[in-house]
Length: 406
Image (cartoon, rainbow, N blue to C red; front, side, top):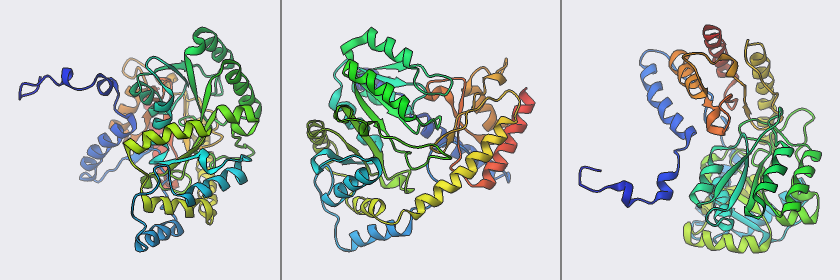
């Protein structure tokens, strides 16, 4: 009950009240307040929390946006994006993913997060099931809940990828109630990348049970060593028909704030998504669309620079973590996250990943995201989208903290 007499628990929608706040953004708010206090004392927080590149948007992309503004390309566009952007997306899929689409198969939105939300709204009726493999990006489950669907979790194996036996059991149990599965490779938070045979096995199960696939490929450009990225839709026409590929310029080109994401899917799916976009947001930001055209069609040098730097950081942080007692860790194949198992350090005071993250922040001024936010309380997520100097300092602090609580 508020001071003016209204009971907002009864007035506001149950859908909104059922949602959880984003743990990553909540963490950033907490860190900002904590960091402000520390700076007055000559200290600072090492931030391994939020997932965004620490590089600036490349100059050619910024120049394209400036030119668009100077040329007064600032009006409404088609709700699903300008033709030039869709054409650049088509060419990207053709050259990089061996996929042929038409303009009518392409949808551009306000970041991959909004595109995912529109896809889920397009498919999900009340109580429809969406399969969410663990560990998962924090917004997947909440977007399903917002559409009054039901997220059902698929267990992971030791490589933090889908346990195929568990997937088959769930499909048998729920049958036609299942509408979608969300496949994320490279994965946030684990950095795991599915190989071709693993994707083929997943695709076979989805075709068998008539389950559509959301393939979130936002981190596809950041893969390391001899790991290779595959788009599941490229394996056959049957898989292409049931797959919605989601991508964005946000991570690849350090454009997180520009908010341009996109997807490719069957024409019938795009047509329904367009109606939702018409009513919800009209169109993606117009100058940002022109910037995205340059990002996709212009020089890719900045992507290679970032990838090479991330790989150096990944190698360093993995080696350091593996040397810490009671820490277990898989080498990430992609993205810019590492997902160590810290459950060997749990004790009477630190009983879960939230306790661990809270104590690490308060005692040693290092910010990480609890694994429970991603569906697995044994882990924490560390982003290595940070300078090497900060990574070295942060891991030194992290190691000292782990030694004290061992």
